[in-house]
Length: 218
Image (cartoon, rainbow, N blue to C red; front, side, top):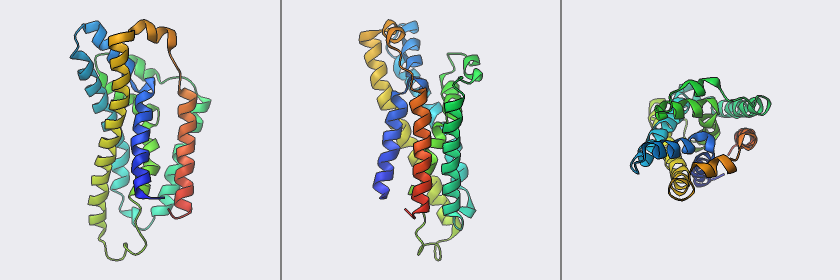
């Protein structure tokens, strides 16, 4: 499993998150239509991106600061994979959307995006991929200080979150622009697509991928 393939996984997962209407691009469209100003669309997309990026960092940074990652890398990667699979299984069983999202004012897009990403396990999906990128080669652990590894891992966490969010914003923004300028909200009400089941299954698959890659030493 090459590092380049894992970075591509970060990008593709971001594109997948962006296409998913549950990550908020319909809110950006509705906000722009209600304000009747073109600049409201990029502003709304920027707020959604900010919230999503913060949610990614909230999940990834604790893993990057684990000193025990040096000695327990494989075990942590397997545990993270199992956690992601458990989240996917929970979402398959519980189809209800978190009530807290309905209580957030529509104008607070960054907060809504942060909570939506946390509630749907979007950050957890990146954990097995991130840990694979940060995997420590066996011959490196003897001469690299734990503090240096932590600094490198924290930097990678920011890079993963930024690249993933950029891909998500590109995909969601492209759909939002197309709907805003040509299709309108009536199109959404007639053709709304639900990816909840696909989302839950993707979490299970990513978690399984993380467990297998850690177990096989990749």
